[in-house]
Amino acid sequence: MEYNKVAVVTGASRGIGAAIAKRLAKDGAFVIINYNGSFESGKKVEEEIKSEGGNAVTMKCNVADFNQCEAFIKEILETYKRIDILVNNAGITKDNLLMKMSEEEFDQVININLKGAFNTIRFAIRQMMKQRSGKIINISSVVGETGNAGQANYAASKAGIIGLTKATAREVASRGILVNAVAPGFIASDMTEVLSDKVKEATLGQVPLGRLGSGEDVAAAVAFLASEDNKYITGQVINVDGGMVI
Picture 1 (tube, rainbow, N blue to C red):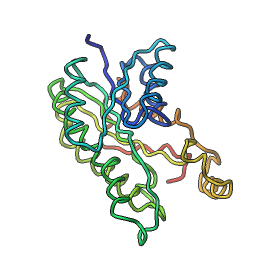
Picture 2: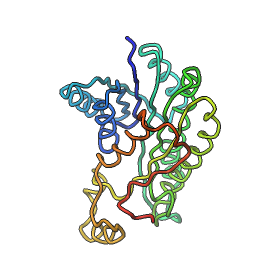
Picture 3: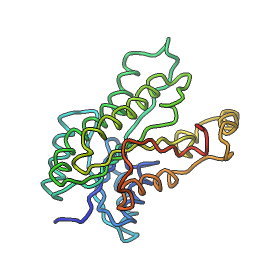
Picture 4: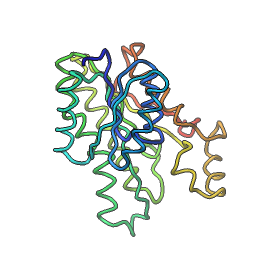
């Protein structure tokens, strides 16, 4: 079956990724919900999308694995014939002070957060070039711009996403492909739920709007960049951070 718009969202079984998948489906795209850990969580997002009248399917792939990504994209193209929107959202944290950080903690974060984005772009870009159209949105973080103590690996991966976004945007602009990044700030999620009230209060003190953002706030920015309304924005980083980085 062929769809008008096919969107791939990595790490879409929960949190920001799930919010992005739901928003793109609401806007009319057929959404591939990528997961690696929990099929049940991905399937739940799929069912929620379908209950709202949207279309989606859940597919497993470890984005850190180059060969898995090749097979993943190949299967999507064989089944759905095109990829119009690629959102690289999959990411993890393994926080530790640099002097205590293990090689494994550094490598795991870089491999999923940064290499994972390279892997999916590497295999999706050929089809987008054939189509002479496509939107790629990479999820970075304000930490990639400001740094954060205890997150050298995460900050490096998210800063790398910005460089990857800008370089890719330059390479593919002549083929009508737009590549941008969205950098969330302090967003309500599973990760922020476990933080102490003291840490939350200190972090909110850095946010001029004085409140947490939501996954839907991030999804709205992604949806705009992926939409037909965006015809002339590429190579940019859009901060969704309540003013943290001004």
